[in-house]
Image (cartoon, rainbow over all chains, first blue to last red; front, side, top):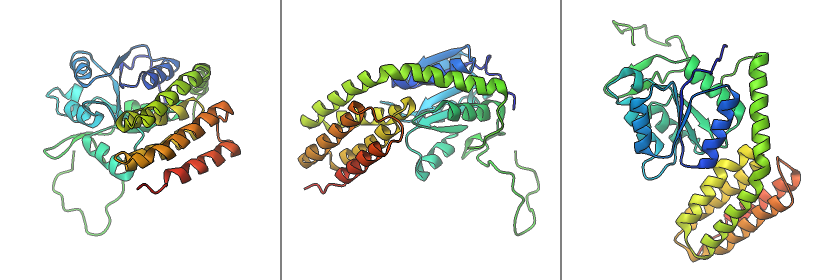
Length: 164
Length: 132
């Protein structure tokens, strides 16, 4: 898969400066030229609404407003290009309930902490270059939560229109 | 995690990233020692919320810089502090665990050494201490 990250404008939303700099260090090695860092919800939203971003890394555990809330806010944007920005959640918590919470908030990918360059590479490649269809419905906004294209089992297809 | 075969250029980028991390890792130990000292202070003063914050941070960082067992040990300490943050009885096992984490640094037990794993086992046991 071709992964030219040079022009991927990236925002890192992380209140731990060590981890923020780690992600930045790795992104630089991936040739990413345009990297912004924010350690707060409000500042991050400002940047997201005014800069054209291609990828956002969000820390799960931030104070006073956590990463999930930020992701939900981004997905609610009136501007489709902002709402559909690839978002990678960085988190220590990879238990099923947290994965479901993140998935239903609309993350593109989840990057487990402690972060490794290899994991970051694959997650970013997937989020930026293998984007899933974007769903905007009353109950969910975000990349299609289905990751596999499985044939329907059991009863024949009854939907009249293909899903988006 | 879905993966694909890496091109030479992609492999090179990963190697550069790892080299940059390794270079930074040399400075990480003094920083981590200071964090553990701060952690100890908070535990002794019963400031468990502050202690939890430090442990969470250490847990999220250490593995990235070559200390996966510190991440694991910090995870056990986090669970203990979460469980016992309203109990004064948590101070003793928590202090003992912090001392073991410091020992791992002092003995330079990076990576997944048998000695490091043995210390993590000890930490895991301490983390299950019954609190009254």
